[in-house]
Length: 159
Image (cartoon, rainbow, N blue to C red):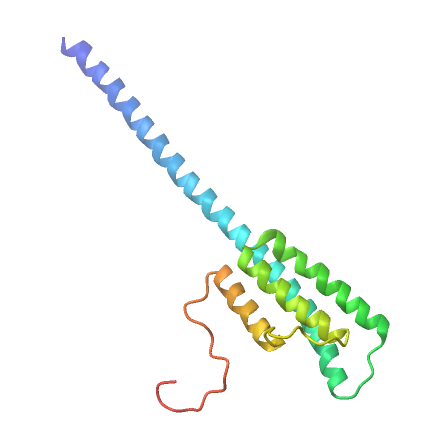
């Protein structure tokens, strides 16, 4: 009887060990796959945000040059606006609705200013729209714990 039971018990234990090992291996693999996918999505969002910020910065530089009295060619204005509107569409595709809306609002303000139009009454100034976009982008990337301070530090203790 022991000659039959012991080998049978060994087969059962071996099978159970194999099944448990496969289950644990599958769990680890699934967790690793989820982590890699989340990392790739974050990287894609970060790239989209950086592309948009680069285009917005180019428009801001044109606005700064104009404010200092420098003439900006009409062809450069159209080129910068085209790149800005194109770059704005990428966050709309890969980011949350909050980021997409913030990018859209900021783009509308930059477009109006670069074309020499006044921003609609009651609209926040360009600076506030840029800050709103940056805060939405920080939350999108998971780095926002509290909003960044937007005023210079006074150097007092506790700041």
